Image (cartoon, rainbow, N blue to C red; front, side, top):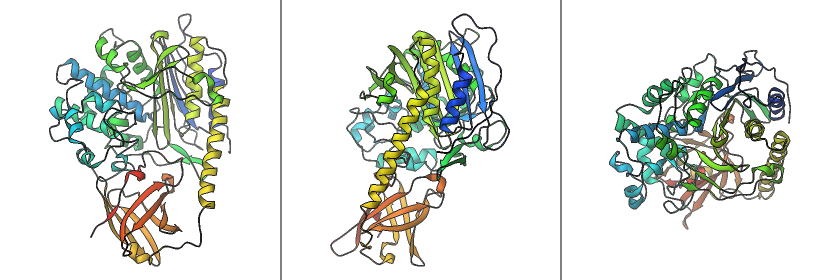
Length: 516
């Protein structure tokens, strides 16, 4: 993979620090190496230790090829690191006795429903936050990703049409759409939109004056990092995700300066800088208590120190052990923005790494290096470990795609004339998808998702590949038709071509039926 050098730009860390709080002495060199290794144009780092902001610093550039530096106030989309803000907002309403964690959602949203009437009746406010509803991984994300014409309330209404993947509360499967519903609960109970509530009741009180709560603000210009991603093997700027439908799941844009303030509040159990409280010790306990267990998986050999004894999800936070300590962690991912927040409360340390390129190896190698410094852990080369895992993963993905292509029977043509595949197809929860025949080629268009339009290339038999016109999507998908005995089309199903496709492209959950 092509590598490049990026200039470092930063603001000064705090000069007077109590003994034991100093940052890793090699932090700047470590960050520079991680950025080169993982091709990250710019990132920001915040470190808090024992209630002291040790680091609030920017590195690199906002936009590849341009001189504008990342500084401590540069905004990045923090994506799913927003989730704990939504959980905190609900905690504030619980403290005001306007919401109960274990009350059914339908107490606050009477029209809300899931596929199973039992789940509709039993799903609680807590369940909205902990990924155990029975929905599959990323289920329903195509209702909002890529940006759709559905509004927030319609997305929530359509959840009743999504079949569960598992029984209720029996398994962990990460979702975004129920955080959207959590935002609707906040609005119904408080009389304020999620955006206004979080802005006024959390960001303003914490002093996160530079942050905002809308995906769309990432496109507003100013001191904002440009998102980047590898497109056809080359890292370049891409368009930011600008739909505000799912702000409660991932809409906050923040900076190193402001995330440092947030880390202080979380690590102190809810105390603000002036000694007053944003939230109570009980709310702090609720946020950081494991609710949904996640199976323990041995890490790759290259990342052996990640081995743990417990893992699970609390209220907007992942909860696991790291080197013998309870750790609160979460990642965030949007097109061109990925981030990591990690806190070890008993060591009084927290770190946030915000980046403008899609490399988990970059944010994790930096965050873990910082944690290891404060824990006095043995030296470990996280950059090398994540780089080797990345190389092996990319090779496996490429081999999987090669095998799929090699197994193709190029002589197996579609069963029907192309015009016979044309028509409107409907999925019970997404809506309509239109296939048309034009000049001897098939096209496909998702009726509520303008970016999901492209051509259908014959693959083999009655399977085609949807090649989306917007190549930044990186989400080409197989489309396979099943025929009735009389040769008419019974249904069509989809799945992503590449295993590297983002899970929010949940094509596999669609069951497309011809509209008669």
